[in-house]
Every structure is written in C-alpha cells, then in structure tokens.
Amino acid sequence: MKPAVFDFVRATNIAEATRLLAEAKGSARLIAGAQSLGPMLNLRLTQPLLLIDITGIPELTRIEDDNETVTIGACVTTANIEDGRLPGCGLDMLSTVAAQIAYRAVRNRGTIGGSLCHADPAADWLSTLCALGAECMIAGFNGKRRISAEHFVTGAYENALGAGELLEAIRVPRLSVRGRCGYYKICRKVGEFALAIGAVLNDRDREQFRVVIGAAKGRPVVITDARQLQRSDGALDETAVTHLLDNHGITDRIDRRQKLAALKRAYDQAVS
Image (cartoon, rainbow, N blue to C red; front, side, top):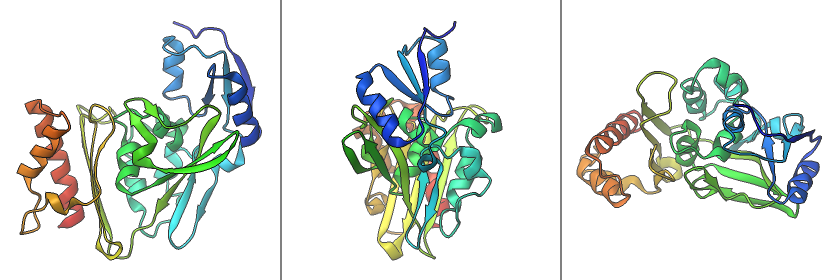
C-alpha cells in the first residue's frame, strides 16, 4: 500500500514546528527517522494531512553535558549513541543498549526521541530511560515543561504530549563512580522487538535502586525502590517478582517466566 495524500513542510525551529502542530488541530504528524511512522503511513494506519520534518532543527540534535546530567536532543540517532557520541562518565549503558536495537540501517535513521514518543512497550529506549530516571523536556506552542520518562508514556503507543507539543530532549542523570546498571532482553532473534526486558539501576551513593520490567502490556513496570524485591542475602526475590507481575496483569506462565529471566540477568549485572 501507499500513504494517503498529505502536505509536507520542513520546520526550521521549534517555535515553527509547534505552531504548525497547534494550527493543524490534530491533523499533523512530526517526522524524523520515520522508522515507525513510515510503515504506519504505508499501511494507512495513520493518515495525517500534514507531515512536519523536524530533523533540521539544531536544538533537537544537540548533546549537552555537565557534572550531573547529559541532555540528548530528541532527534539524536541511535547510531550516534552506539558510536559513542555521548560523553561517558556513567552512561556507558546507553551505547550498549543502542547496539542491540534492531539493525544498523534502522539505527542510522531511528531517533531516541522518536522511539520514546512512539511508546512501543517492547522498545529498548523506553525501559532504559525509565530505569535511569530520565526526564523528558517538552516544548509547546504555549511554553515548556518537564516530565519523568516513566510518566511521559501513558500506555501502549500513547504518550503525554498535548496539542501543539513536541519532545525536545531527554535529560539523563549520570551515575556515581560506584553506580552500576544492568540490561537484558529476550527476543526470538537478534534485531527483533523484545518479548521481555529487564533493566536495573543500582546507585547506592545517590540512593537510587530502580527496577524496570519492559515489554509489558502497556507502560513498563517501574519499581523506584527495588529493596522490596531483594532477599536478605541480596539476591533477587523471585517470589516477590512473581507477585509483582501478577499484580500488573502478567499472568501467562511463559510470559512471566521470560520476564523473570530477563530481570534476573539484568539484576545480576547491576548487583553482583
């Protein structure tokens, strides 16, 4: 199939992009890497009247860092992250995760912000950024605001962007010197979306111990204080995890075993 007819405009700055979004009143879509939007257009799952290209906006491809955080523009590609464009100092996990996403051709085009906005429950960036406690910087026709990554995604393929708003950047806290992360996903073959994702942040110097279970039915399962999932000897309490999965509607026996296995691998990376 081919897309339905639409108009196309290339925005030169954020103000122009948000103005066009607001004026379109829901009939416009932003386009950057198009790794998700492109197939949806071809299958006519979405039929916008206007596509707004935002890849030429400098603020959306910037990378800024300080002692505490790294700010990643929404249009920074996964390949750039894989290739080490981000400053290190506690964020090496991002390049490791990037290298596991799809295939190099997809990583060359796909953007970190586009993945987060698409909000596919099985996407790698969604679980990773929730585990790291990242913050989404949103620009709109009426101003700017910030929201945590775990609250930015409101459900499967749903996000918290309002009319006339776009995701400008993602602000990721650095780990302390002793901070550690773990990430593991289970999929049928390399490059496919995950069946189960486990992500763990263990940074006791900053009093952060977070666990994320991804590839769920909707939003990732985020536990901001993972001590409740620890046994007295420091190992992962599999019974507690099983009860957690049950409480979030993950009751299929095979699905639950896969998510437990992925979380256990990630936990061991971050804690052992």
